[in-house]
Length: 417
Image 1 (cartoon, rainbow, N blue to C red):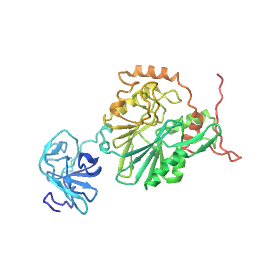
Image 2: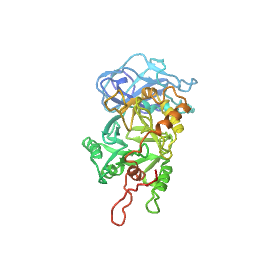
Image 3: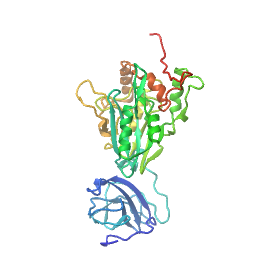
Image 4: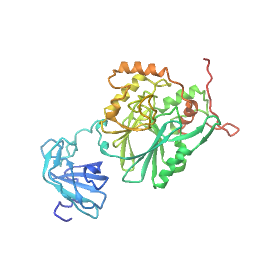
C-alpha cells in the first residue's frame, strides 16, 4: 500500500465491522455504484471499497462507526472531516480515517472486542438496503396498461422480473408472447441471468408470463405466502374438482411478511400489503419499492377492493405501512391509467413522498378512505380479462390442464342479472 493513507488489514474484523451499499455519487462522482465495507479497528475507522481497481479521484463523504471501549456500543454517528485521495490497489482499496466527527447522517452498528451484543436491527422501513439503487428497466403493455419491471443488480448480471405479461386475444382465445419476448430479448442481449420471477399478487387484468419466461430463461417464481387463500377462493368459484384445482406448491417460493431475498448481491425484503387481494405483497429492493396495484400514480388513486378477498380497510392500513418508508425511495407501479384531466403521458415511477399526496389518501382518516374507496368500487366495471387471468395466474402462468382433446379451456361463470 502506498501514499501513507492507511495500513493493509489482514484481519480487519477484530474491532467490529459493517457492510453496506450506497449510491456511488455520494462517495466517488466518477464511479456510479460502489461496494463499501466499514471497519472499526482500535478506534480507527477503515473503509474498504470495490471494485478492485479504483481510478484516481476524491472521496466526497464517508460514514462509519467507532465502538469506543466503554462507550455507546457503536451507536455514534461519524463523518470524516477531510477527503483523502483514492489510490489504485490490486485487490481492495483500504485507507484509514482518524479525524472523525459526529454527524446525524447514517447509523452503522459494530461489535467491540468484548463481543457485546450489537443494537437490534432497525425496523423494515429503515433497513440499510434502502441506500442501494438497483437499475430498473420497465416495459409498458399498452393493451392492459401493465408495467413489467426488470430489477438488475449493478454489481453482477443477476435480475428479477416483476409482473411479466402474457398477451391474449380474447376473441380468438389465442395467447402470444410478444410482450414477454421483449423482456427476454433485453435480458439475453445484455447477458443477464434471471434469479426471480416475482408476482406482486394474482392479477385480474392480465395473464402472467411467469411460466413462459421461466421455461426460456430459468429462475424461480415467487408470490406472497397467502396464495393458498386466493387459490381456494377461485378453485371454488370455478368449481374445479380433483385434477383441475391448484395449490401453493405451483409457485417455487411463497414469501412471508418481512422475509429477505437476494438478487445477485442485492438484498430485498417483502412487506405483506393486503387489501386489493388477500395475497398482495410489496417488494422493497434497495431504494426501489414495487407496490403492484396497491398504489397508482398520485393523481389517480389506489387499487380497487371489490374482488373476492379484497378489503378497503386492509388496503388503507397496507398503504400506511408503505408510506412509512423514507420519502425519497422510488416507487414502481404495476399499472398506469391516465386521469380524466391533466396528465396525458404514461408514467410508472414516483416516490414515497409523492404518494403521500395521493388524491385518495391525503388528509383522509381510515373511515373516510373506506367510505370513498367502497363508493368508487361500486362504479367500476369488471375487468375484461378477469376470468382468463385468474385461471392462468393462480397456476403461476400455466394454462388449465388440457382435456382429453388436448385443449385447455377457460370457464366463465354465468349468473342472473
